[in-house]
Length: 239
Length: 239
Image: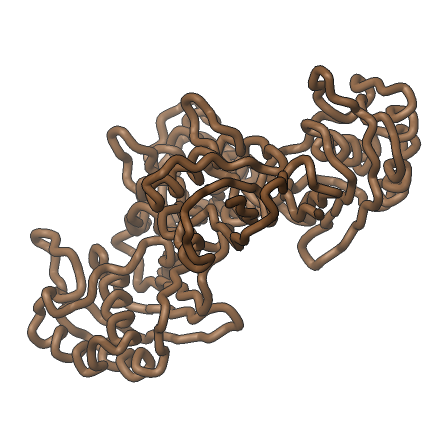
């Protein structure tokens, strides 16, 4: 039987999603919890890898198991997981469902703090002194649509860098500016590279128009540096 | 010159306040930051030790230095500290000020969640399934006043176990029950032992009256087990 699960994690303590040789990866921790619970080897396949320090509110993975447990019993895997990793749901799915191949679009969120972070908020937001949100607002529309994001990612051989951004929503709360990126799929470091460039624009070091230039020239040298992982959340995956 | 500083930290990643041999203690991290900043050895003296995983919103420490830095420059120690440890203030104080000896009273807070914790809240609260707050409310008044808290602490040789609790405030928010303990001083594990016993009462496994019995008999065997450190905050120290 194939199962689809939704996973949330605080990425602070982990070296990213993928299994690591000498570091704690989320995938390894989850697979270990399933192994302890079921006394069998369960391999999980996630929709997307997240980097060290990146959080997830709605990561999705699938796995196969012959065990005939109730969904309630499957959820008891949480008893074997550290408290900063929580399985939110597990349900049976069709035998050919694939968390990555079948995903239609994804939402990532980036949280910018308006004031210096407290000891308790620091791993969940990023504060940048002197940031002006208005030029950022001006820059956002340049990203919308289908572009070659070669200038806004770390290149991975054999992967197309042409992606579509459907929308970028900017929400302002009392304490935060929250950017939500909705796109068909995302490249390695893509959101953080986009945000890093938006931060340069918000600091007045770059014109909003530069987004257009970088998309056209595909020159990563022109982009801002990759923004910190701790402000980034894999928010939702749509199927 | 003697300085008084207020410190906040997320205790999750640390093995308590005190300098540890093979583990990361908050004191060592702060002293290292001062050393990197001033190129001199600065020893800090805190008002109270906190255990592994316990948080602080208002820890206080004092230190001596001959360096004549502006207070603004002293605050730049934050640039050398990890983001989950923040110095909130540093000011000059009288030469014989002592963070621990001069403290008049302290407030500790314990945060109980009404619902199972998310991956992001788990290290900052404690959820207990099936807890009823009403018997806890009934039990709180028994703690008020001067008592021998031998039944509610880990014994430390040569230290009196007679302490005064001035007030325990119970505040209910949408997501939490927040207990604030105000007392002249606190013993090792005292708040967590009190909360552990209140949890037993909230689960109906013990009568509220038992608080009185434990205070009178000073029998730790009767008390509940020490509550988890992650719900505890050193909130404020009064001078």
